[in-house]
Length: 289
Image (cartoon, rainbow, N blue to C red; front, side):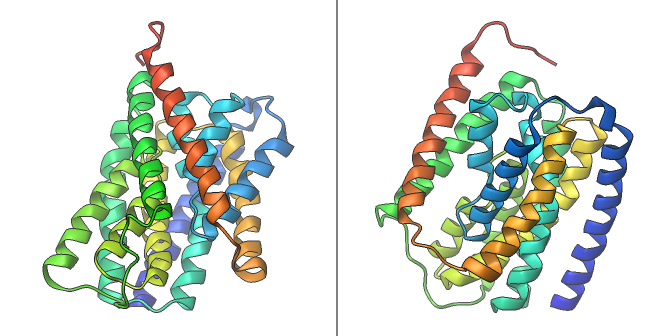
């Protein structure tokens, strides 16, 4: 079953990659004047942290917003498209390194992209204000999830490597919902990790589940953003190239870091970004495209 899952993910990624790179090549003359070093550095650092389980969407949103690198309306599409190949790399690494019951992994990984496909088409056509509000709410939820973990208010998990019965049914539905939410820029990792812990699974199983489900939903949903021209091509390609390098460094060289201080920092940054999204959404002169 895992072999089939890997094959499906490989085919999805190949098709996405062809469609993505062709679109970037055809439109390279429309690249913005944003500096490459900053964009590449963002992709490298955030995907490095992503591989260690911190996530990347919240940090990228904060950077894009603070330095005005990406139009707010294009942030969800840019992150979903630009991080896809790096996340697929993570998925293949952790599917091999960490044991998870195949039915649990496959079912959760399939539910997420279905939610993403349905969500991406809607998000790509949303107004800037609605995206700002959605991201503000989503980032606030992510910050609260991180804070709950830091304060030991969230379950610490158990030893199970799979789920059955009603528990499996619930996590499949929730993965569908999380997949749809990812299309507005709300990272999949924090809510998925909280769910895995809540149902008593081994914390390590969160990594292949998060990364495989996210890889599939991004490969599925990213194409919709490309089709709708709802992403920044230059920023996305920088995230892709540098992100893969960050993944390999974290997975094979660093492997583990004392992350509590970093998580507190990320929590603060996410809260700040959530507030700025709400403030931006309150402005009267916003576009309704």
